[in-house]
Length: 405
Image 1: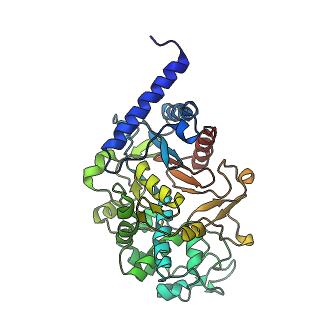
Image 2: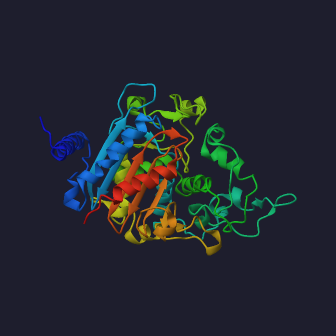
Image 3: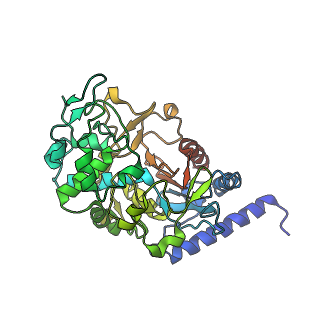
């Protein structure tokens, strides 16, 4: 019997690494796995993540999690904890599929930036040039009826959530439309909630940006995403509407502690049958490993292996703060082209280095990319309410405390 706890702990970590390597080897595109120590991190400290997640599962704060950490291009932590749902016995899998909700937005932004690189759009194009329904928007005034907008809505405003668009309806209502084209034609008739460029209003700007990309390219957004990101990066487990063959790998959405296996709290049943509503703001399902490929592409400056998606200059543009001083996002944070940007770590309340960028989803999924540390962190979970900020802060603290060199 092994009585030394340090030896026992190292044995558990070795077993976890062996299992992780076995998963990577059977995957169609193996992840570049290695030991934490090989990239200046501590395996013992990273193991704290396992205990933290197990505690959350035992407290029934979520059914299960998948986490992934990489540094310098090497995946040093990839774990699954808990079960696929509160009321099922199937364990969470490393390749479980998660609805990443608003983590769809950065992929939509990158699709639009590929059109930017081709000279088909610019950041200063009026949105109405590409979507005529937005040529003459009205703005809701504080008093009285809506009036004509005094500022022009630009493509830049869609990337940065400063377009003024805001749909008061929830996701379930918008998913009742049969297509994004049908939705945008109706949505464009609603008054803006602020003058374009004057305020940061989260949510629907990326739906408009995704549809703008569709009209410019003459293809549906999911087709553009597949051609320009998913296929080049080998993201074979990323779908708007996952096929039935992968149903057994889908993590169930948990709402107020109970499973929602049919996802009726998010989507009307007819939307799942049609599979024709393709949103730029939400809707993608993916795995931690697939999303890591997208993140590593950005961290690499736009390529992964021999496949280039964006140029390094465009990735740098994505990760810069594009907000005016009077349209700040949150203390210590700016907002780039589809992602939040850390400008002052101490003021942000997050451990990410200045210059890092990140985003998350309403079910608690999150990612960040830290160029200074060559670090990527990804957490997948399906719970509402999710306590996303608390998850982000705690997961970040555990990861950064594991950097020892």
